[in-house]
Amino acid sequence: MKIAIGSDHAGFSLKEQLRLTFADQEFVDFGTYSEASCDYPDVALKVAHAVRDHEVDLGVLVCGTGVGMAIAANKVQGIRAAACSETYTAKLTRDHNNANVLCLGSRVVGSGVAEEILRAWLDTPFCGEERHARRLRKIAAIEEQDLG
Ligand code: RB5
Image (cartoon, rainbow, N blue to C red; front, side, top):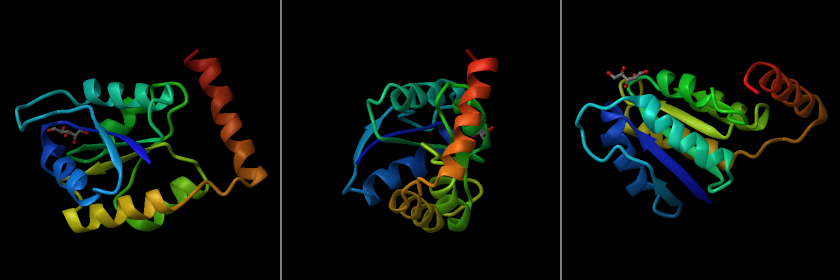
């Protein structure tokens, strides 16, 4: 699996840890590369574009809460970014929503929980059921109208 990963300063340490822990995955690191203060939308945009352009399979973004990254990434057409702080939601964002970007909050979850969330998210495929596919088509139609 090829995964775009990025963080702001608040998420830097957790991003580095996830890259080390998930050594079985191929990561493309879009920064940030230190704990110097930076702006999360800049990194969210890079990861979102890599996912949108199919340079990678999925994306992971880490900031303080996960929420700023999710808000920013979801402005990009075709991106379904989900901020998760437990595994149940993480699994369903794949199973039902076919989320293609996972957002984690380093100030919300500890590193152990973050690893469990990412593992659950990566291990769960989209279920493919028509009712869920239909809802995703409706989201895509909203994007066409409002973002296109
Ligand atoms: C940075 O202080 C913080 O605002 C950012 O990491 C994130 O939590 C925003 O949503």
